[in-house]
Image (cartoon, rainbow, N blue to C red; front, side, top):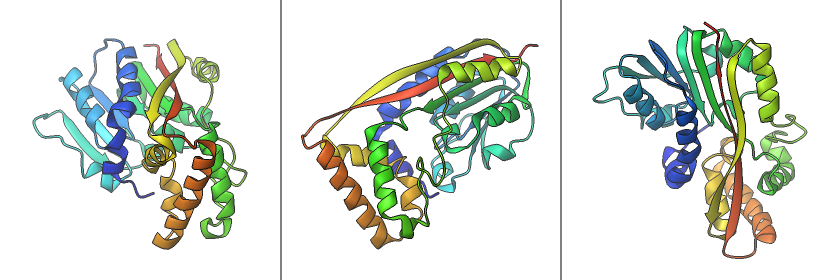
Amino acid sequence: MTWNPDQYHRHREARNAPARDLMAMIPALPCRDVVDLGCGTGEHTRTLAERFPDARVLGLDSSAQMLAKADALGLPNLRFERGDILDLAGEYDLMFSNAALQWLPDHPALLARLWDHLRPGGVLAVQVPANHDHVSHRLLTETANEFAAELGGFTRFGTAHGASPVLTPARYAEVLDGLGAGEVTALSKVYPVVLPGAGGLLDWTRGTALVPYLSRLGAEDGERFVAAYLERLRSRWPGERVYYAFTRVLFTARKPG
């Protein structure tokens, strides 16, 4: 997928609020190695490096465009690398991931895989969007079905690729308990965003939900896709104000030491 960090950061404050809450859920703990999985442009990775100055902190992301904006200057304990989460190597005392794991399938298997890279006494801290059943996503799926030929049948949360991999807080807690986790906290929280009508909602989705679709389309088909999606959004939200109740799932768990 081709990410645009400038577009993503057009709603920086709204996107940062869940990350700050996740940071607050991380307990005090001695850290030698910290990893930020799907670090994007690295702002939260820098916060981790400042919070744990004696730790080696790694920001890992698959997007060269995002990492080009990452800044490790002035923090000798911080570095960024391009790579896939599923190819993670090494062991860590803190594994942090903000709005990244929702792009990967089979979360019970994914958590088990990550758990193997967590040292005894270490903490896994994750935040994922859980808005896949919102009407804006259903309208996006309808648009993708209209463009099935151009997209090769790809539908992010439709029948072609199954349902969202994101679980409920209760299910995450059950999976983590099955891995032997202690001190599990899992919760759901709504982070409302007020947007200027359907156009504002389109601008929001351009930074995230639209990315896998537009990455598969040429410029002309991409413009047609966006226009068709915007028409659906305007039909649902014809006014100048959209209250977008964005739901997130946050959880932390500690590996017994």
